[in-house]
Length: 457
Ligand SMILES: O=P(O)(O)OC[C@H]1O[C@H](O[C@H]2O[C@H](CO)[C@@H](O)[C@H](O)[C@H]2O)[C@H](O)[C@@H](O)[C@@H]1O
Ligand SMILES: O=c1ccn([C@@H]2O[C@H](COP(=O)(O)OP(=O)(O)O)[C@@H](O)[C@H]2O)c(=O)[nH]1
Image (tube, rainbow, N blue to C red; front, side, top):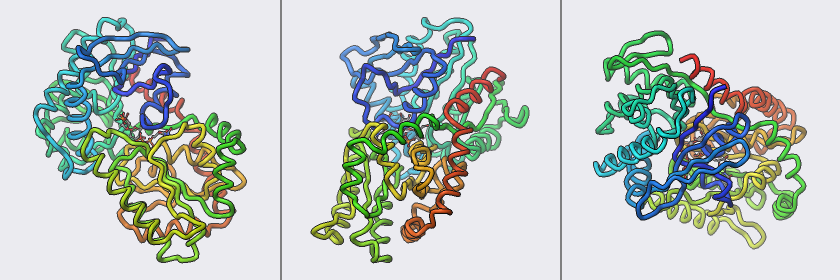
């Protein structure tokens, strides 16, 4: 079998230690995928040095880590700048927050060229190369220009926007052209894939080769939807063990006979956290029986804190939580527990298991692994209910959830109320459909289906 070389900006390496979730679902998903098959994981070390460009290589288990240092300027222009102030808001339909400063684009191209120059000497002829996410879109093009002939696949973890939104990006055409240097471009959902095809055909003058392959500027690129998933079986086992650990017991004791609603998200404006607090507020207002009874635990580890829009959303979230608690709290009950820190996934599994509702209401999200993890962690006899935004990729698969529109606070409050009142039979039935689906469509199935398609591309 050929070697698998995975490339992503974010790497979850054991040496970095103390993982607390701020790193997000990409790192969780790739680690799970690589653990089983083994291979090389190449990416940013998370370190900033004066010169940048130093490559640290070491083995851990079946994975060889190759991690590159960047400079503070790279970090500002490539990561905080083009990746997270240009592409991220645009691809999440937040044109109002997008900043297309040209210096960011130059930094993005420079760092992609650096990745290519450091990766190239490490490659063997029959390697399978799998590049991940919006930070590294031009990487295959850079590798091709330097003579790389291996199969190269790309997987986008975030949504691909509709063409009318994409064209607001000043360099939209060259970004799409550079995607055509891949043999296979994978998306989270069919909607994302279709939006890409629409742009290629209608805006860029490309043509269909067959149902999944398009041709643009003389290059053919195959496309596919490959919804990322979780290590379902393993997570279910971990959650069962976690049900009786010290931390879970402490949480359970603090909730007593009340209803726990749990949310776990990086503190990102795409996650809809302020609207979520407002929906919970509406639940307390419209259904007063929940006062003194419902507890909303929101875990929100800081993310991309150097980016001003993230500082802004943090201030807004803190104000919203403070306002609701001030209005409704009593001497023996605080409605919202807002935690601006992360927890290990092991602890989270126990938290998911003792909660009545998993509340996942992003305004846009590529997939949202938390939604899938919540399902995997439930007690089969007494499962909680997943309340899930229609704008998360996961909503395409988890049809046993209560699907909501996160912009509609009153609608979300109604769904919360239905979830709290739901019979055990209905909860079990909804959960069973989702759990069985996630057992079949787990992280191994994701990796295998992508790599098979890449081999055939
Ligand atoms: O690396 P960071 O800047 O700290 O951000 C964390 C990750 O956020 C995004 O995660 C996405 O990938 C998940 C798994 O496919 C998906 O469920 C979620 O919807 C996406 O938002 C980002 O795409 C990653 O590159 C970041 O590492
Ligand atoms: O305190 C935290 C918060 C999140 N996570 C993990 O981070 C990932 C978040 O992935 P998701 O796809 O939901 O969103 P992203 O952060 O990638 O946008 C999930 O595996 C969570 O369990 C964690 O381990 N600890």
